[in-house]
Amino acid sequence: MTDRIMIVDDEPNFLRMLEFTLQSEGYEVVTAETGREGIEKIQAAQPHLAILDVSLPDISGIELCEHLRQDPKTVDIPVIMLSARSQTYDKIKGLRAGSDEYVTKPIDPEEIVARVEALLSRSRHLRQSSAASMKKGKIFAFMGSTGGVGATTVALNIAAALSQRSPDTAIIEYRPYTGTTALQLGMTPERTLGDLLALETDDITHQHLDRHLSTHASGMRVLCASQSPQEYRELLPDHTESILQGLAEIMDYSILDLPSIPLAVLPTVLQHCHVLSCVIEPEPISLACAKNLMQLLQAWGNTPIRVVLVNHGRSSSSLSLSEVKRQLNCEILGVMTPAAELCVKACNTQTPVVLSHPNSLAANALLEMTDRLVEEHVMALA
Ligand SMILES: Nc1ncnc2c1ncn2[C@@H]1O[C@H](COP(=O)(O)OP(=O)(O)OP(=O)(O)O)[C@@H](O)[C@H]1O
Ligand SMILES: [Mg+2]
Image 1 (tube, helix red, strand yellow):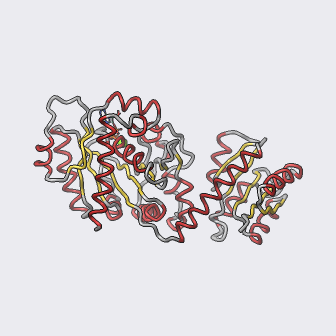
Image 2 (image 1 turned 120 degrees about the horizontal axis):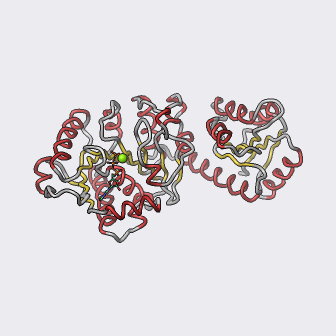
Image 3 (image 1 turned 30 degrees about the vertical axis):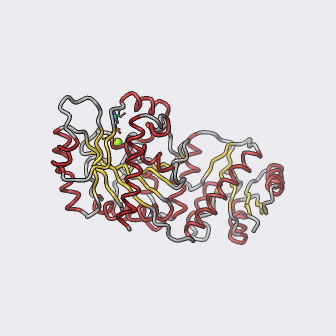
């Protein structure tokens, strides 16, 4: 079936050029020169993708996009917004209105074709995954026994390792506002968990979830928390339910990086995750906090709990593995060896250690943990 593309733009020459470009690529094209004509034609033609100019003579492209997102029949149509303005504020406005891409004029026809192809292919893939209903992906959570133990480092590396096995792997920074994920990956996310939490739970569809996941250079999908304290958003049980259920339906692996302070929604998180790994440093204070945390986790759910030890190499009172095992009475998922320098390099190159230094001791330890996590889960289900 030929994909149908709607273009709404009031510059006739530009419209013809884009129409011709897309038709020569084999697409069926429908055009309109005003916002209202666009709405009517979109309702009638039900296009697979829409390209909207921001400045239209009647209603703006942004309003048109908002209109599409409010109508269940058009809510999932991928939208590319075109504008002569390149200011970040305009771009954010366009993305907030629900557009998938924001392209500044003058445009390169090849770039538009590439963006159209990528969006259509993702949208097709999502439709198929909804139809193949409902893929039950695994959710693995990581939580430090105290702050700064290395939970994000472990979670990011395990997500990066899993993303090499399946492109449908996401790391989710599940906290009310920013942690270190964006910094560690060198990303400036256009959409965040905060934007997703601002939606009504019914609007958290597969398409919306996908749209909020940024893509790291490695291919790993990333959902960062809100990037500023002003955008602090409480994590609520109903939203958590919709987000985690949706992720399990579209992703093979979702890695949750949880803050070390137990969230009020932790019981809901536990209901959805397959394994929660408590990340600790092998030293007495971290261990004491881990004991408390594990009691709480056991009281709040019956999700399997594992322990990950991160050896920062900074404590002279480092406890042995058997001592940690004995005191916590819990399975150990693995031990990350001291790797301060590699961690710094990973941050500088914005690439997790398992990808940047796959043959290092630390990467080996993390890759073993990844295998164990996946295999254990398979065994638990068998
Ligand atoms: N194996 C390791 N050896 C040495 N340093 C490490 C190791 N793993 C992580 N680090 C470093 O420890 C610091 C804290 O790591 P990270 O941000 O992953 O911790 P966290 O538990 O997620 O912290 P937060 O509580 O802020 O979320 C970082 O500087 C990181 O580079
Ligand atoms: Mg962290």
